[in-house]
Image 1 (tube, rainbow, N blue to C red):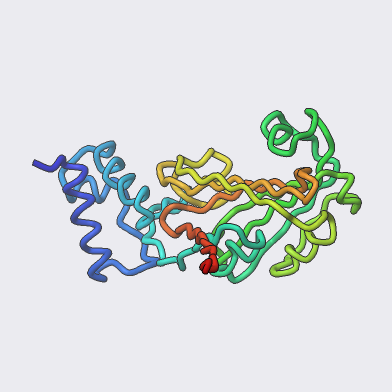
Image 2 (cartoon, rainbow, N blue to C red):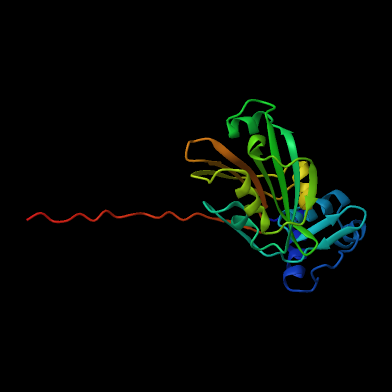
Length: 242
């Protein structure tokens, strides 16, 4: 037998998917819904948390719970240029650049540099309409990136060209994909529930000499993300001996 929270979530989900409650529409207040379903407010909030984790409902602080508009899916294409791999579905991209960013322990390990080595950080936040869509943090050793200061710009497709100017051509790309819950900062930046899993991709690129020239940490909300990797096999054709 389904619990009360799942029964309530099922009923609200049905109203949303059948169009009885429209995208962008505000749900009744939590106290009103709790009274309607004859449950306590904590039980009602647990039911809403189920829908929030599924990406159907968004809770906006101070305003209430709203039915989310369906967002375009992002397909991460492995092995290709960084920005082409993930911003295809986005309508806009805002980039914040910080130079002389000090490498933390995990970044130092990824880039093969000593702790607190200076880096240039590119924080790329893509948007669909006014909604954040995906987040990437890209790091390049500072000696490869000489531009100074911290600034923000709506760059869109120029990010890859800018990165290509800063570092040698990439020869080898290693990508690690995992599913996890977002950090509080990621949940706040992407305006998603802390219970919604994200697709986290760590990407490390090296030049022909084996030096790591770029490390990227990409976060895609799980309600709109897929990952695609293609492997090309070559077949050796041997001649026949007479």
